[in-house]
Image 1 (cartoon, rainbow, N blue to C red):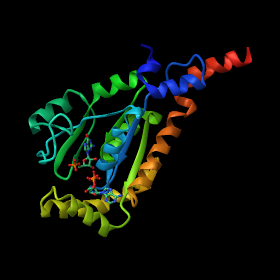
Image 2 (image 1 turned 60 degrees about the vertical axis):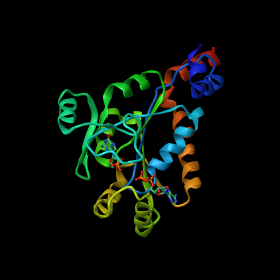
Image 3 (image 1 turned 180 degrees about the horizontal axis):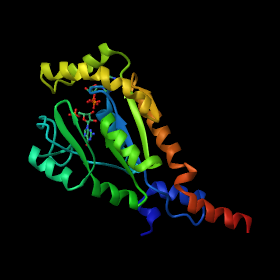
Length: 227
Ligand code: ADP
Ligand code: 5GP
């Protein structure tokens, strides 16, 4: 089995650029204030298997919600375990968000990127800053905004997964988070879900075709073209 067979998006590039088998993978970061819709959009992206996106599973000290499964949505760990991972340098980034600790295990991400595949991160603006500083163009960052604060509150209440005081805290913190939009490559206002999803797909498609990710392969093709 060739790399292209295993990874359909590489096959796409291989067809366009004869001789190419690889491009560099990138980290796709989705951030938003709680309730704006990034979990929903992440789920929709992962359901499109042909996109071959791999979700990074964060570790967190937050209590598990009833709808969540350990090892799928997060790895739920104790504060002491979190500190051990962090202090051993095993987290690519970490942050305290809404009073809990969250972090991205480094090794699985590096393994996927090395294969020329892309990794999806659902992390906050503090983690985004750290990843962008470490990886440069290997990270593509997208910020999701709600259409209004009233709708954000309605979505948090409709989700009905957090207690009232937690919802109130998340809404208050949303005002601070929303102002971080300037540090992102793309900003999407998630009013109509299908429209937002279509915009996300367009961003992924374009970012996969960035020449800087396939320099060697395109270089080889151009050498043949001009020979
Ligand atoms: P986040 O992960 O950003 O905290 P969720 O994806 O859990 O947010 O979305 C919060 C709630 O809003 C969920 O009940 C979800 O079904 C709903 N939702 C998400 N996007 C939209 C949208 N575009 N229109 C209406 N409801 C939405
Ligand atoms: P929730 O508790 O609603 O799942 O997530 C709360 C916030 O933490 C969200 O903004 C989410 O993006 C962020 N988050 C989740 N995992 C990580 C992580 O590994 N690192 C960072 N920096 N933020 C994370």
